[in-house]
Image (cartoon, rainbow, N blue to C red; front, side, top):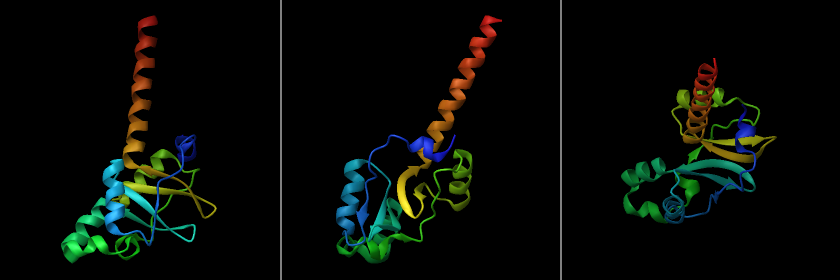
Length: 141
């Protein structure tokens, strides 16, 4: 299965702009119970803002970080994946780079956003379905 198939039918990706304050972006993370947001600038992905960025920058700048712009504190040069990539390849990339979120980019445009949780859930569902099929086969034999 490909990343493109996994994200089929999903709605718009929640994003923020580089000019969004850290306070506003952190509120979005908390309200939506998510771990990261793609950060956009002029219609293109400029970085990723995650809960880790909040923690690291709080340690570095203190509470004044909440009034900074996301563009000042985000993780820049985001690692991305194409829709045609396999789920296993995306999992390997995330593990190797020690990241938990990947923007899905097609022709320079972001078309989705996946988390390691999305990929692990898919793999577990696949394994459970295969196990159920095997049990059914054995019971019929």
